Image (tube, rainbow, N blue to C red; front, side):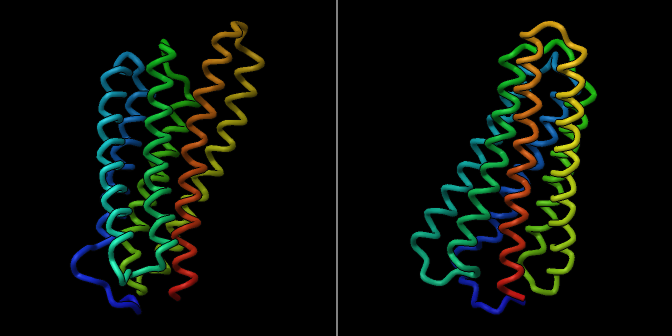
Length: 208
């Protein structure tokens, strides 16, 4: 078990897990949107509701972090993990808002595949934060963090392919601008997922 006393009045690990679960929900809704832009507006509203729920979790955690005397992890680590989890959901929300606002007619294979990597990264984040409670799980958490990095690398490659195809095959400049914005916003989500993995790995290094 963890080497530090965990106060019973508030469980920060619960907050991590709840925020990660909201990220998975948002990511799956984003994938649904990329597969069917005809439903973009209602799906965007669903993602906005998830983003608000994650904000509530974040605010609760930050409020308690400022009040409790003993914490299960270093305060800066708790802060980094919960803020970066919230950032993932914020960026998913931003991506979905762009898609709805720009009125894209149909998805591209690249956008669908990037959304799949976002789902993969969020699911691995959820696995990793569930394992963070006990040091016996840290080897698996490390593997989950590696998988998150792999998803980010895959999204980077997809972005490069998508932009190369966009600039060489699409003639309408407005369409190019729209899709460039969408592709880059999707890739930004995976960058923030990688930041979560870095924060989690930092905890493992300290606690192992």
